[in-house]
Image (cartoon, rainbow, N blue to C red; front, side, top):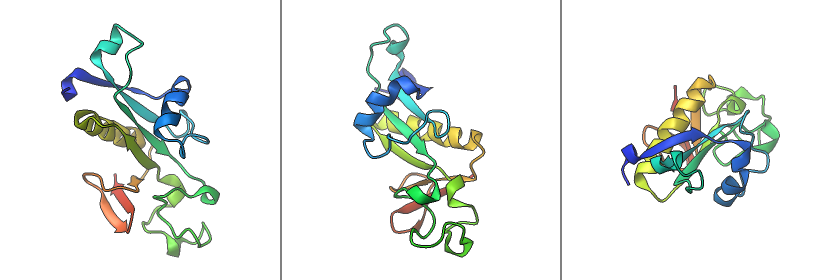
Length: 147
């Protein structure tokens, strides 16, 4: 499947069951309004709403008490100790990106659209626990892309 035969849409509350299968450790406190995410869908989904998504990407803003795997601060330091931050930005203002798909075209589309969504949310950047194109490794398992 090519990227041109795929589209994306914002993740909704109604997608929670699908997302829970893909992201079991991320979904319990995830909010489609606060955090956000996108789903990759074949263009045929416009005619047939039962068409299964090809994958999803979630953004997750973690409060200091619930640090995610790509939290860009020292998890053992006080959350307001900016000397322990890996960037000049408050780690709570940087969403973590997680992607789940086995389709390379969908993966590229999901990452691009999730990055755009985080930028629209006025996040200063985006983090990931896995290496992604355009992301810099700041510490082992902590990757960052500044906007």
